[in-house]
Length: 130
Image 1 (spheres, rainbow, N blue to C red):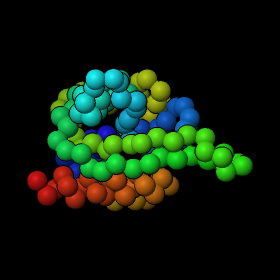
Image 2 (cartoon, rainbow, N blue to C red):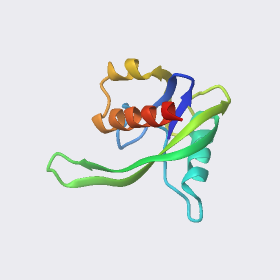
Image 3 (tube, rainbow, N blue to C red):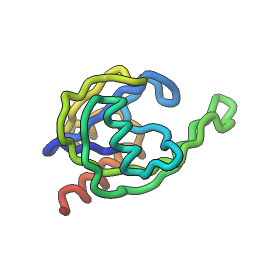
Image 4 (cartoon, one colour):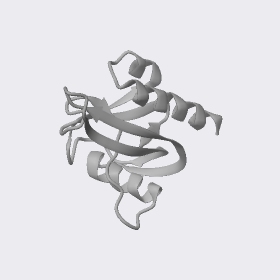
């Protein structure tokens, strides 16, 4: 979930694999019978203690992580959702260790997964086009 609060988006530091210790976006497994937007709302609550209003699907990507022998270790089909922050003070919960509100120029200065940066840039264009 790409969550917007004005010009800032929320990033989280992962506490578990895959990507443990890396900055990422709110997300998690979709439950049976749950819509993409319902999943986004629940994950934002569980991971950062915030309330959001999803407003569109940004894109879908494959998140594939390989081990040292190049065997597939994790493969996630990721549906990225754009959302507006509604309320709550973002704080680490669930399986994350830190949260940060950050502008897109600040995000570009961090060492983050290139696909994450691409998604946030696409989300930014969609958000500010509305």
